Length: 356
Image 1 (cartoon, rainbow, N blue to C red):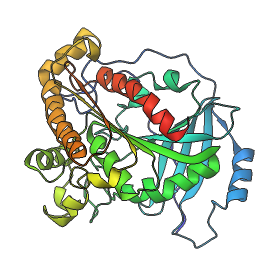
Image 2: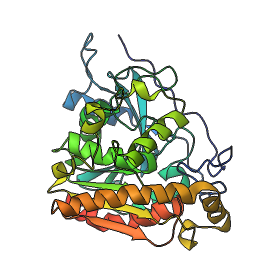
Image 3: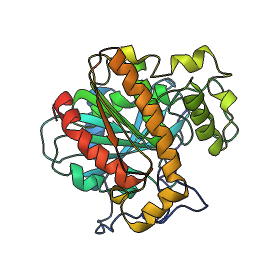
Image 4: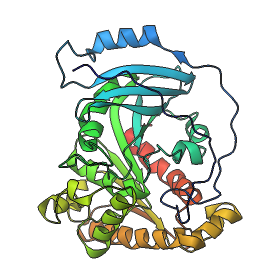
């Protein structure tokens, strides 16, 4: 069956606060990124993509329904593009925002997963931080998938009436990387990170696909899935987005344990690992006064939970003799100010690991 024609993501207004009380899954009420200059109309790289596709064999032959497909690569600016990829495992087109440095030699790739809303809600690294500015002159391709709200970026056992078909492990580890390597100038060396909901899943993906990533980072995530705290966090994140937890890994048991980074931490040996979480006490690192007040309204509690989960992960790695970095800040609630500060702190370590 031919994939559907990709549609661009729905228009959204950057900086608008989320609606509803306590919406601090990845953005505190009142957070706003600075306006950025307008850009010219997007320019499809039709000829370039056609040549790349022909050279790399990314387009499947008619009837090959099991192959991921590059649908389009649209340049928004010389440093920003949108990559549309058909995922056969999910039966739909996934859009991926890409940051790249034009006119450079091949570069490694840093995959940055979104948080609870899957960036579909206009809450993301791109919308809430100065990610484009930070990576503007760095030798790296940054890939930010759009989608996966409440999915934990894993392969679900069953389709969900609300969240649909989730086969994100397959997409992120098997379908997307070959497309990225064929469409961009990459060294085929990768790192991955997750924030909030996706912090634990980023560690899990590095375990499930051990040869794909040299470095992994979890920013204010909850790595555990089987302990009382981690299990409760998993249920809360899925149900908050309307999903049925039973459709993911079934009842708590072996499938849950297989995706618990704390239990399976030994598989991370040899990788560069960065973990971060703050105390939950709002502070200047959170940003403006409104962001700090939002921390008092709920973001602080969420961050305190992630601090406990992350500390457990760090203790497990230490017990196994696995080198890692744990940024445990005395102040900070579950805010983009905190996430961005820890991402900047992690970058030199990640860059060294992947040769950026």
